[in-house]
Image (cartoon, rainbow, N blue to C red; front, side, top):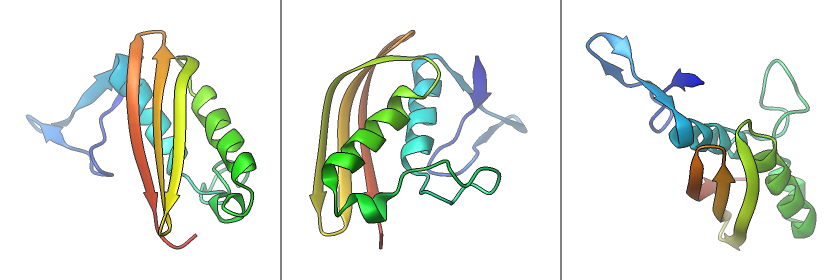
Length: 114
């Protein structure tokens, strides 16, 4: 598959057209979008997203929810390693993920008032 490339929530252009991505970079982009979608944020489906606010009170549920979001992305085969840390309203997620295209080393940070 191919998708429009996003860089820090921007849609870069090249020669007057959107840039495209595929393979491991596309899967990584989909994982990042999934992890940065808060519960009830998606206009078309309020059940999509992660409940970070309540998850901070129950970290084992939050970790389970984050892993489910990763595994729910098309192209993901398994999570080989996973670590989640919390510090000053910042959640850092580090994971090694096997995809149908190869291995992704993910480092994602979620910030803000949750």
